[in-house]
Image (cartoon, rainbow, N blue to C red; front, side, top):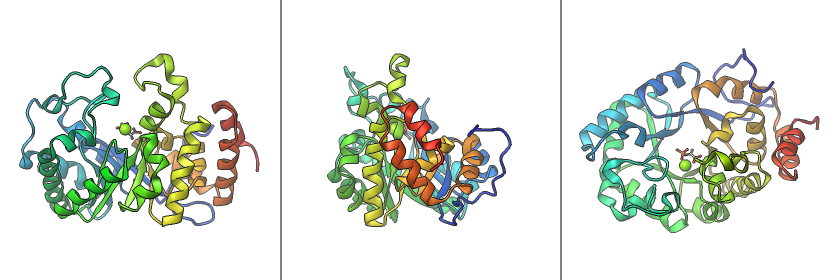
Length: 311
Ligand code: PEP
Ligand code: MG
């Protein structure tokens, strides 16, 4: 089985033929960060900062944020860490940022949209992240959630640069952003695909509703075709394209993602070794063949089978 028990992995993401693919962790707390570092994560591809403040009823001060972020960054001194700015709203409500009640919170003011309404909250967070980067010694980039357009991406990057943060990127988790990946990549240093939300929005299937979960299967060919557009744009521009949704944690799907042009995979610490080991036994041309077969499949089950078939 692809997620089999004991797998050897030396903590460097590399394909069988030597091509590098970064294998990094998703974290939201100091405990997560320690676990990811201990299990060989080369860095962090997604630090969900909203997880630090789920119970806060007022906005944490810059100093409170600085301390919370530095505690998570510390195990990754000298390593790359992508800090996502607050993704409040919908499935991750933050009481100090809750918008007016909305009929469809997943389609409302969430993620970067909150910051557009209240830029001072974003600026205080960016200032705290810049300070925590110095405190921890981690190589920090920032990333915005829920970006729909290149103009939003450019706006976020300009705020990050004003805060003294050198590297800034955005998540691709809205279909419009995937369709305009070339324009977005022109504005940012990197992108990272949030496949959980990208699936939700491309299938119009709420990620919190079990009855529609089959539509949100990360092997859906429609989702893979959107990812392929982003991978191609990344290959053309030479800028990194990550995946930090659940899709990255499935070893066989990880090979498909690499074949689609993805250059880093970020996941829960429990999946690092299995994904690292699978990449080590797979060459890039096999990844590309698996990707092509999965893209052309008619449904998720067929995509899984096609990716597994000997090429
Ligand atoms: C995603 O949407 O895939 C993602 C990584 O972000 P989150 O799950 O935190 O919304
Ligand atoms: Mg998301």
